Image (tube, rainbow over all chains, first blue to last red; front, side):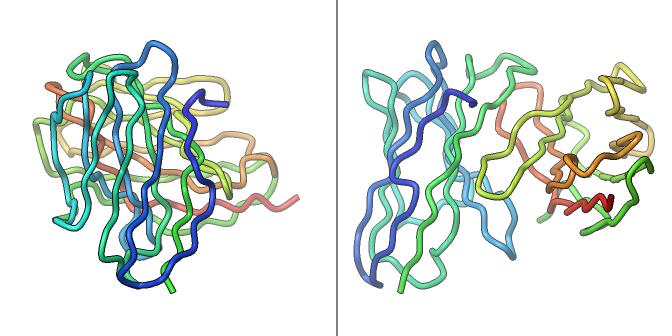
Length: 115
Length: 112
């Protein structure tokens, strides 16, 4: 068990809808990362938050947004959903933002299916 | 732009054999190279990691070999066991932060 908790485990929704994925990092970890895993794109970095502030953005669509709250949990909001958004969404946490070699610990993901 | 290329995409090995997975990177600013293991229905889990000042690192049956001049690194799984059947990802990050760039993954199947 990595200590990173993601909810829900599964989510089925229709095109055009909006969903929120939630992540609770490991105790003591200040950084939260979101990744998307699809069959054809592999693991793609979406966004990184450190202690409530956005630190880096990757291949995140404008329809997607995220935030990290004062209690350090994070939410990833996906709106105007399309079929191609169906994927596994992983959250990872680490101790710091720029500490070399601080390992990322991944949760078990949220499987999103858009119908 | 795929900055970390991983091969092969899949691998079948007999129990007791050696599994070898290779990765190549382009960005010379990468300074940390971990390998992750992922089982179905689970998130990736850190297996072993190396920095470019070391050419080899061994942890149990898992060994990373690193060639800085060739910008390549590889994972060797010695005495492969059926329980090692999983998808393996190499990754890389820059010294300034922990954002990981992942390779495409290798699905390893160890036959008993």
